[in-house]
Image (cartoon, rainbow, N blue to C red; front, side, top):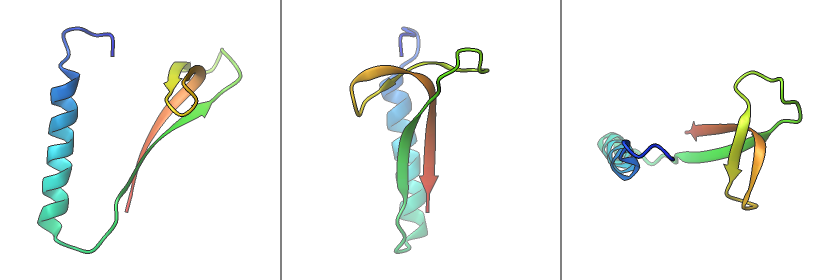
Length: 71
């Protein structure tokens, strides 16, 4: 999020717009769930582990972000 050359608002807007058109095109009575879960880890020698912002408790934790889309 600190990358100044990336237009994050446009990226999120295009993602939501694309998802809406896909869901609207199917025209089915289904439910989609989006979840961004923070997976906390305790070791610092784990590959690709970093400090991520946990918006639930408002702190930075050591771990991963997991984004899920469920039908």
